[in-house]
View (cartoon, helix red, strand yellow):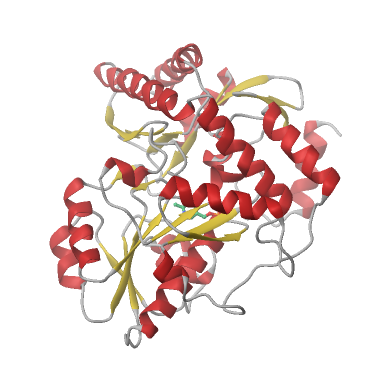
Length: 395
Ligand SMILES: *Cc1c(COP(=O)(O)O)cnc(C)c1O
């Protein structure tokens, strides 16, 4: 099919819940993707922070092929090697103890919410409440929409489950006022992604640590910021605070759908046979791909590389502020945001015309999520395109 035919068929047969750009991607290789006409683009979106190793990394492809030939699915009625091996790897990486596998970020957060509630009932808290923050994004299921502190996502989908209270992000005074006997957990992204690339302050994290010492669980949603994206394995390592429950998804499977809720022993123990489950959870192919992703990240030193190159990119973006009305450049590692003084969606199209894929979130924030493998030369190339686009945008 031609690109135009694909778009037309999509408009006829898919539910129109995405606002796709008029671009059909047919192939990817490393930091680049190709459209139906064979045009090449630098991909600084990475499938929304999914393709940490870029597109079609040979070791991920090989792991998928090998596992697909051996066993694609068999259910959680039996023991399978790939989820067991991956669970151990995640436990070692996080210093937490046990893992529940599912298929997406929202499901990982659903599992976290259920762990929190069951743990709270066991400790005599009736009607447990979870505090979350404004600007957060935790997923699109009804439970995670209730957790998400942005009303626009739940418009038209009420009633939502009860038991969530939203507090202004990084507002410690408001948080302390909101905590009460019913507070079972506080859930947050250490670095908010969807909400516009806002890192938590050290003050907030220090306060969370105090609350954790008083028995309130900390749930860190690292679905977007985890696994090396911020220049550390987990974003919480920047703050010296460790969660009781950690959720992961996006980059974990190298592009295959997988999510994980990781918890410390005492919390994980509330899940007993029958408590929770997922037919596809722990799928062997997805788990084999994830193991390959973690191996490559370690073997190739990609986290240190992303930390250094992310810093370089942030410095270059910040320098653009001398020439263009850019409000702020924020973020860590390869999760960077450039806040404009006006709606910035047009910049995405201008960059696309010149061969660079970027993303705009929270209306005015250009979000950069290059693969962890991105080199300085590729950053320079992207910055050259971005500057061309900025010139047109402001002319
Ligand atoms: C993307 C995202 C989710 C939801 O993940 P899905 O796989 O789309 O369900 C949850 N939390 C954060 C922080 C995310 O960025």
